[in-house]
Length: 297
Ligand code: ATP
Ligand code: ZN
Image 1: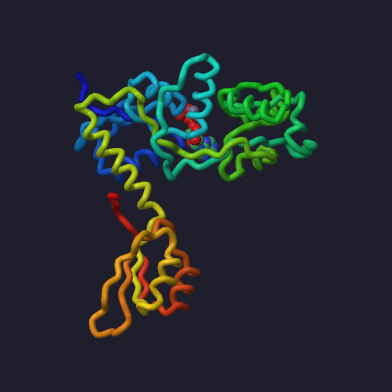
Image 2: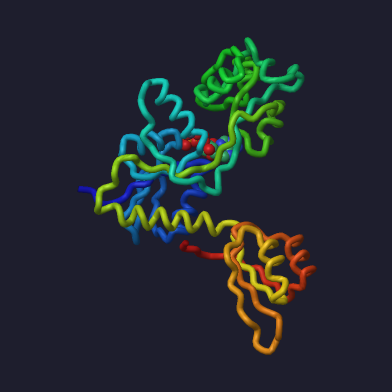
């Protein structure tokens, strides 16, 4: 009976480094040999399985892995593909993660007469995401030919295999290099944590709970700041309004400073210079903004 948690992550690609970094931030120590498919968590009863990102939903669906880190784009495509086969998708999305941001978009070659999605009627569209694209086209009542490719979608127009493409885009530099122009966003994506819907055996539950709580803590910390400042007590309502995404701040009297108090608060968003200037304008002094390292709600 295997009592160790199994987590599927991308073997080698855009999500790999961020996925490992997230688990590292959760306190996991592991040793990874080159080209190893699996690696052993040294200080927690969990193992990492390194696979192609497209296989991650299936591994969780089939309960081979308890958890997986994968892009929303892959999840959505699989969900629709399962649906088309009459299979209910059996993975649950636990939470979105702060990496792997990109969008699935339509891009057309330079010189293509684009007006709106109707311009795609009767055209050949190359993509690795046929289910998402077909749904998007159907929603707009556009009939086009979807050419399914497993990779190198961006060169399909130059090779004459398609007229336009529907591909993942982050900066757009790949498109520019291939003389393509982004014209429409089909979906936004980022990495997500998925889990098996099968009840996790009791002996794995405690570590699942702890890991999910730590992942949530790590995600909350990103972008969070700890802010400390001195203000007149009378300015507290204005200060509370200015602190971005903070809950009940701690207010501490300052010895021998009459009306002035120290305010400490966790802000769930970044604190920008503009906010500091506004705080100063309502009477704040000694303002310090610090990064938050760990958080357990
Ligand atoms: P694999 O060999 O694992 O199948 P892949 O070529 O499908 O690799 P990558 O290009 O490494 O995958 O992308 C993995 C995921 O990273 C994508 O599914 C998407 O969620 C995310 N991503 C973020 N930015 C981009 C981008 N600019 N292009 C492609 N994917 C991106
Ligand atoms: Zn892939």
